[in-house]
Length: 169
Ligand code: S3P
Image 1 (cartoon, helix red, strand yellow):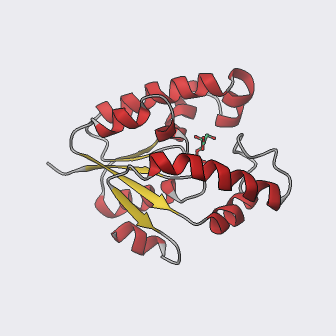
Image 2 (cartoon, protein in one colour):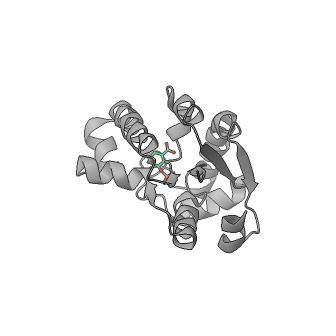
């Protein structure tokens, strides 16, 4: 049986991009957890955070993660940045058979540059006005979250690597 893959990493680490590319190259089915949540809830992620709050989001994130993990026809899953860092989400991933977790590790500076351009639709950082504030936030947040990310089966250092190269790895 072919191994399935779950891709994790901080916001802006390229999870969806790599998952989509991998899906195209292998012709295997891929689902992005955030897209799946938005479709199921009929609301965007910022709308969910705004109207129902983060605790509600984490609750449904777990439920939808479980649905995707239980569906063995889905070969590639890209997670939200916080998915493996709450409740028993990481445990759910780790105990799914035949599934490899891959962490896309990206340096702070690169994440800050990318997310400064793309923070609008990310409720956890959209209020951080200056680049300095954003970098400060990411530094602490990434430090806390790395504990979870580093438990992935495979860690890919993505700095200076093309999308093709990362997908190959
Ligand atoms: C989050 C990351 C987002 C999305 C939500 C919360 C996080 O996904 O799930 O805004 O806690 O890091 P991306 O990593 O795709 O931006």
